[in-house]
Amino acid sequence: MDSEYLLNPIASTGGFFQETTKTAAKAAANTAARSAVRWFFASLGPFAVPLLFLLFFAIVIPFACLMRDFYYPGEYGYFDGGIGLGLAPVSGRWTLTGKFGEDRGDHIHMGIDLACPEGTPVVAVAAGRVRLSSSPAGGNEIWLYGEDGRTYYYAHLSGYHVADGETVSPGQVIGYVGSTGRSTGPHLHFGVMVDGRWVDPLPLLQGGVLPGDLAYRYVDGEKLAAWLRGKRSMLADHVDEIIRAAREVGVNPLLLVAITGQEQSFVPEGSPAAMLGNPFNVYGSWQSYSPGLYESARIAARTVVKLSRGRPEGVHPIYWLSARENPNGVYAEDPNWWRGVTYFFEALQRQI
Ligand SMILES: [Zn+2]
Image (tube, helix red, strand yellow):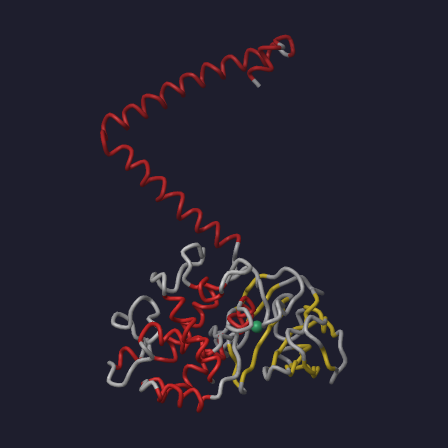
């Protein structure tokens, strides 16, 4: 503005006059600011610069975190993979508004809620057969009996795009997001049932980031137990807990066992109970944290999924779990960790 008036003073004499008084006021403000800065440095001396840094972090970081929550209300803003197929249950943008296991007063929430515009297509996440139903709570529902042995549940739909009993393929549109049943706004309630129990769908959906070998596969528990017994491993009597955790999160159980091989030599007989409660060394060490075998297996499996994100093409998937350049973090600091895990994993894959 200043330069415009100076170059063209006849544009408006009133404007020109106002501008000059503004300039005088600005100069006075500048002088005041300068003396304040001088006072700040003079009175604080060598502490001035560190204090400025501290103020910067004290204000900027909490603000940034706040804004992050504001812009990304869900725990995960996207699924970069589906259940081994690169699929999400909705085709389009969504926001996670309800998590698995939430206490809703009169019931526990047994699925996830994905809020999206009314009419957003919902898609089959696996091959299987659909059954259409309706209930006061779920409104228009689809039960998808997947060929993978899991049952998928879609609720609150506004409409269907399949007929009852139809066979569907992954990615096929089967219905549309709505707000039927007990619902306060358009969203998809998505549930996953494994062995007759509801499990958290989020890790399964995220499991799609895992390459084929690392993703969950059926493992013969007795065969695995026998293999571990051959190594005099205390894990031999607890393979069911490892397999259950691996299945719930969607990770190959043999990868989890391989990690215990690298971390704790498969927990040999005579090891402390605390080691058996955390043979994966989740959160650093079994000595400081031992949540129990099932729980630590779950944490290890979730960590594997989290660390697998963003793996560049051609990079070894186990190497990536502890690669320094992995932006998600590392499973272990030891640069040879992945070699040990890979060695055990390949042996287990061949023999089990
Ligand atoms: Zn829900």
